[in-house]
Image 1 (cartoon, helix red, strand yellow):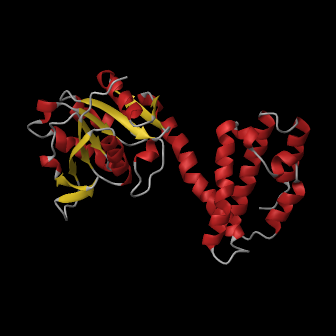
Image 2 (cartoon, helix red, strand yellow; image 1 turned 90 degrees about the vertical axis):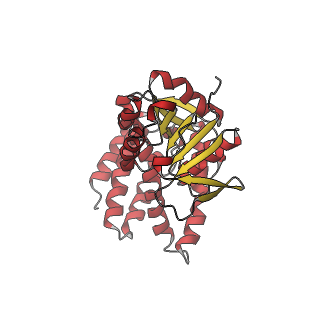
Image 3 (cartoon, helix red, strand yellow; image 1 turned 30 degrees about the vertical axis):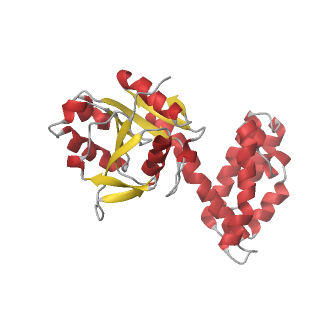
Length: 292
């Protein structure tokens, strides 16, 4: 699938926008202009050169791609400002926003001007300064107009990602899946750090000790279903271990969450054949008797 994008302009240049710009630049796509909210400097450093910045009313639209890389709540404002420009119908590039939750609706004002449009969300976490490597072999959730679909898919493939087509009515389910991973792994890691910090001098030492375990589990999930990757007391029916975990953990919310997670884990393990029906019933009675 060939790509017809040679030049791009950006609105917003945070962690995701910057990383995408690097990925595009490495594929020979020229980053021509960036609109940023605050303009302390008329140029920003990018790819060993100074990149021109504009306000949105002067953003270069004589390009093939406009990337809206701003928070969800600001997308409609940006689209409105672009659609109000006198030259909005003159160029009609492909416009994408990078929100996981939102689909095509925020882009309607530009679609009415003839622009090709897509919600184009990298299913990945980004940190400041990350580069093109963050897009390698990830999925990009794409909701696109028919005339934008091929370009949106080709854009993902060009930078080493996989297009994942998401219908407009499926954006909530797509976004929810992303939130379950990206929001709650840090929470569970924080709880694990809290417990390990009871025997380590600092939380940082605890975190560094736990990270290889987290990476190992991710590797395990690369080749196994979640149920098959599951290890620990649930699949071993180790009731004594759970009792020990709870008897000296003085975090009420953590304890409550732990019990709920154990119940859900038992259901998953039983459903996928990691526990017998008798084992699952024993777990049910055991957990009913646990004092949060």
